[in-house]
Length: 89
Image (cartoon, rainbow, N blue to C red):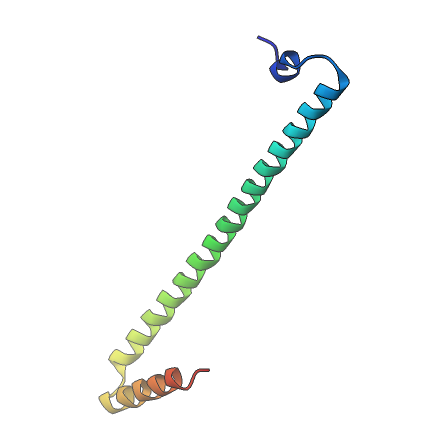
């Protein structure tokens, strides 16, 4: 089997070869675009995984803090948190 089956199967005139090259370039460009999109998705996935990890760590710290604090301090903090959420733009 040939290592250039596409060009072997194309008639050997310059116009046909030129058209075939253009088609292959378009396919290459489309494949590169898909690869880049996948790379961007992979990067976003890593960022989101890192954010989830940070949120879990913060939640663990809050849980530990809440276990150590008096109930009135906890209620005050929860009240401030709920107010802050309501006040967001």
